Length: 110
Length: 114
Image (tube, rainbow over all chains, first blue to last red; front, side, top):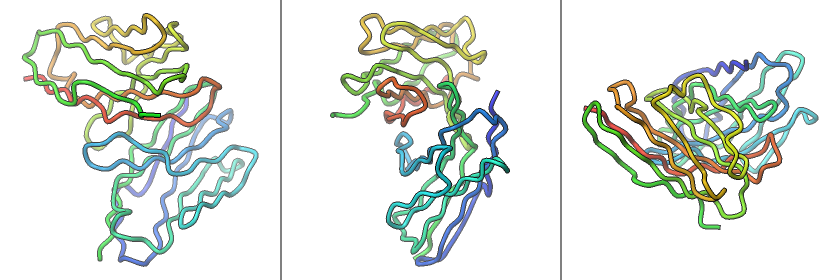
């Protein structure tokens, strides 16, 4: 089955700096890669996703890149703000089997 | 679109008791998923339904766990003879049902087994 590794587990940045979170996956059949943000006491919320036929996708301050050959994908947040502080999860999905990474706790210091 | 609703938000129970959680998915979403999340970990897949049919169950889902979605709308997850190791956040998610698509999560039910 799919195995998703995510790093770093914690990340602290200064407000305005960029943050990068990286994930690797094992199943070459995975073709859908969403990123979720989870705030305390809430369920994960989708922030951006990418499919295997696309190498990069951007939505305002958030971008995701995918390297299918190397089986890794990354989340980039630019101009970070304190409200970006949360736990971020990557996931990889194939045949309706979505597996999540262990999460990255991002802290943006004002 | 009122979002995925889960009840209760918190449940404290004694070891050996049975508990039941409810999930109301986004209306017209055909798929409904149950995940379990422990502290510092990502959600772990438990099971999912396509309409009323339970199509897949994880090996994490022991015989003490049972899930139903009788009319293809809301779902219940029951844990019998709870153990301390069952303490976790139980998350429900729904999707349109086209496969490999975004999941919409509820806020979860936090279970504490004493």
